[in-house]
Every structure is written in structure tokens, then in C-alpha cells.
Length: 205
Image 1: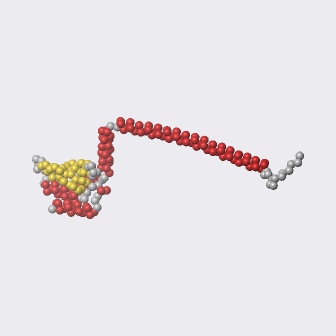
Image 2: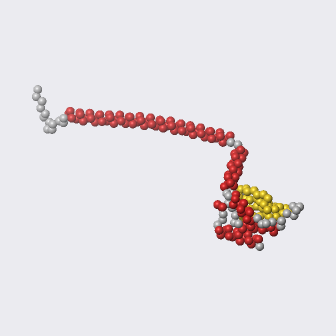
Image 3: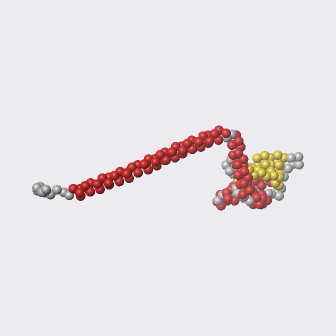
């Protein structure tokens, strides 16, 4: 049998076309499989993240409920007492922090001959300042005033005043002196100390 191609152009190679189409189909199939795998992975990851988010929300709600329950069990009065005790403890620690020997030296150098110290009590006020309450005994009012002026002139004491005065049966003046004591870390600048000294000297005159 004679086979003759009478067309003006020869036909393309059918086998090459088929191979090309097969390769393209295989490529499409591979890409489709890859996309399916990625889709499955993303779906699984989304489900895992959703489960973790749900668990985190459950834990957060549990913690909020626990905090609410604990707050409801707290006695406000006891809490205030604990806070007051902590403040008092801090005040005691602060009192131990400064030099007692320096304070005693200041008192010793300022006491006139006719005045003696009977008691003293340091206490921190609401502003965190150290208030000294001194019990003193003097023979004359002038001696007591001289002691107050001497305390002011040191620059370590200010707002010094005799809160109470009482004369006993022996004619001695028993007074309660109060003043704010500045620990060394709270000392005023030299100019302020000099001004306080001049003020104290003027009051004595």
C-alpha cells in the first residue's frame, strides 16, 4: 500500500506532541499534589492554633476567676493593718540607718549647763521626716530658750519649739521639746545651714 503525503506542509511529529502534552499533564498533577499537601498542612496548623487559642482563653478565664475569688477573700481591715505594720517596720529600719552617736553628740554639745535631757523619742511623721521629741529639765526659762537656739544653730534641727512646759515643786522647768532632725543624707546646703544659724542667733538675742 502506497502512503503519500499530498499536503503542502508536512504534519508535525505526533509523538513529540504527545510527549509534550504528557509532560505538561504530569507537571500539573505534581503541582496539584503539592498544593493539596500544603492545604492539608495549613488546615492542620490552623486547627492546632485554634485549639491553643481556645486553651489559652480557658486558662485566662480560670486565672481571672481565681484572682476574683482571692480578692473577695481578702479582709480590707487586715490588709490595712499589714500595710501599717510594714510602714512601721520601714520606719524602724530608717531609724537604725542613721548614726545615733552623731545625734547624741549633737545633743551633748548643745545642752547648756543648767539643762539636762530626761528622755527622747524619734518618730517619723506622715511626710517621712524624723521628728525628735525631747524631754528636758531646766532651771530657768532663759536656759531652755538657749537650748532651743543651740539646736537650731546646728543646722541639723529646725522647727524646734517647746510643746509643753511645767514647773515642778522644786522650781525646775520640765518641758517637752519637739523638732525635725535632718540625718546627714538630708542635710541642707551650706547656705541654708548658715541662714538657719543666723536665724537661731537672732532668736537668742
